[in-house]
Length: 479
Image 1 (cartoon, rainbow, N blue to C red):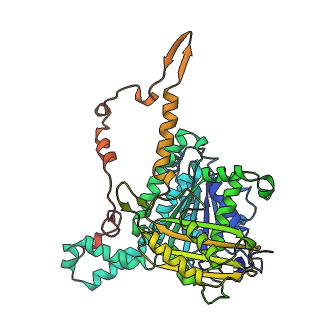
Image 2 (spheres, one colour; image 1 turned 90 degrees about the vertical axis):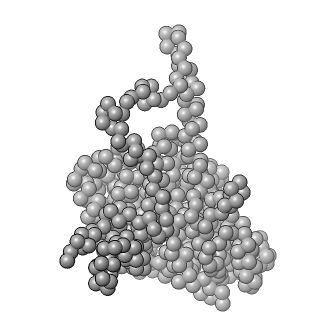
Image 3 (tube, rainbow, N blue to C red; image 1 turned 135 degrees about the vertical axis):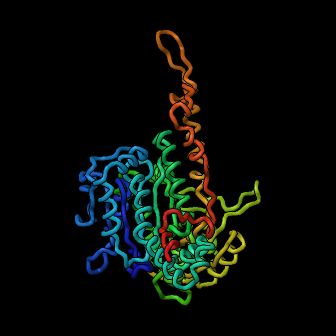
């Protein structure tokens, strides 16, 4: 008995773009999802550093695969960024890929990559910048030009930043939003991967917090969580999946597609409207937290059981470790935007709808909510199971990313520095990294000025921290 609701029309039309080995494999699973006429549900694109990696894809059409023809960039994102910067041909290919291949009629573009790999990490960071420059920045410039005609030039010149902020605010209503889904590595990937991933994750997160960049959400999917779950599965539960990576890809694709179709279904008086789903996904920015819990129908006796499943679901995530919403030590809370509570009851269950209202009341009491609670449920074929989904955006990060990667890196280095190396009978205690063995004077090489630049931190604000240096304000000097 299959899930019938996954054949519904999607609530949001999405272009899926995969970067590197991990990202393209996730998108290839999206490309496998077809409509009844055989056409793909999602517009799926793939970009990688060489042709060989793209040849392993099964479902993305050849016309939608692009190779940078670099022969691979290895597991070194920092070096990969340098290679991309120096290779004009590759930079041009990436730019044309963003400008010419992404379908502008879709409401959302989702970028996928594995952080830690060279190609995926480096190209997704560059692609976010390119997409902003080509798609959303011109909308801000257009609104800026309109404002020039609406207000006196003296007023424009007196406070250009205020005018620019108004232009950006107007333009954001027409942005094509980006959703960023990146996987963070397992502990076994080692300290250098953890260090680089931590740096690139910070860059993505800081970019996402600027509302003028058009990033609707970020999901930092955790490969360590997927690995631990996959190891716990019995052989008969793995459904032919060979490794935790394929397990992770399947889980990411299934949960998003189920949400994107369940919210356009009907059949009850308490239906989750597709417009509600669009508001949760497209409004505001932050970490998108999605969770799903399923139980066999014969285990669910009444609405109270479903309500308890919803309450349990809010406290966790299917794709990463939980996010700490309330910090007891500092008495601070993370800002939670709209939240969705969705139940899918198998047709064999006759429970009623009171559980939805009861769950809503408890969630409002439990979460530091800054928006609206949207609720609904379906009664359709659901593999003789009851499933609940909870999803919301929060201005906070999963625990492993917020603190864990740094801790894991420090533990790696502590173990390394405590190792005793033997040579010709003389024991040596290796205490410091090679890069710390010599005290270099930066001023000798004319690099001391870079220290100040690297130590400068930008304080972002939802409305007032937009960087205007990249926008063309030469119109201010016109007569």
